[in-house]
Image (tube, rainbow, N blue to C red; front, side, top):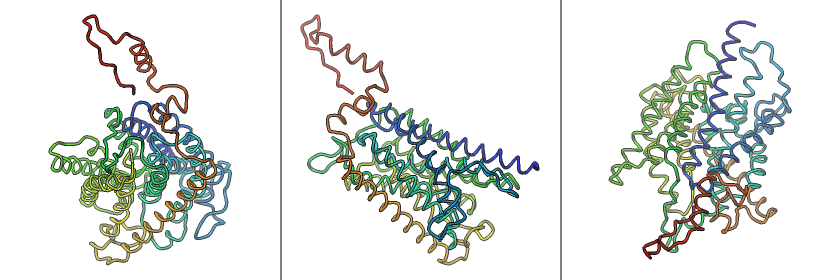
Length: 437
């Protein structure tokens, strides 16, 4: 066992830890971006669905992606992974398994953004199981496991398509079938702003995700030799910064005030977009990719809202639209020196060859993820009778209606105490009763 094997294994394990910790970022992001009556539910379902994804990945997911006895569509071996090591590998196979497991969990977390504030807990459980078997592993095999898109030279270094777009398409299927939250749209079609309850949580969640993304992208080098992971980390951070700035500025120009949620979404959009191309493009291109992602996320969020697609966490814009842009960007900016997969991009003399491969890959992957997710949810709706909680349960909040406890128990206790008080003040003036959360 040489030093390079040990160093590579430690590096990949560090990447796995960072990617798993991104689940904490998603908890804060999703909870902060929604109403406080659902905060405990969001935190809890994130943990138990990651548990489901982990077990499914161990049982069949890893084998479907990387199994050697498969074909162009799916792998078919290494089920119920035993922790064996591959002789001659430059890193621990068990550590690689944990790293890939973390990615599967992130794609599921992305998908569940489209379920927020209205899906039953049982829906999360069943969909987590089926998505982790039939959706994510198939797309991952096509691109990372030696499937048909890998044979065509599809470039997706760390998962703009495999992880983010796949999750976003599942979220789109969910938003369509679940329909908008109570109170989101008025009779005339105009939208109400159901603001999240804690922008500090949301901002902290984005920061945790930004840090975790170094494990996501730089960790995907699967080694420390030549220090190339540092270059990838640089591109990753530049794109995130550019996305934050462009989203902030475009909201300032359009609204007359800088919108904090838009800026945070722009940061994530920059990260999602650079995920495919971080190893294939120059630093200046990473800035351009992030800048465009920040602008796209601003306009796409309004596009979906006008079409009555209720997307509380902006998954479709941040992970879907930015995922498409990031995947296509390698077909434009990939350099001959860095394009270790596929060919150089259009701006470097490669013509439309790589751009065509990227377009084909992103289109078919998105169509597959959406259609399979839609069928799964549609069948679930027929079998389970309903995917979403009742109107009364939704108004009360999923903390109480689904779990019987409140994410902010002290706030609930104070509310109950106030409700029991006499609403007439000593001065004979009726005191306003506070609104229930």
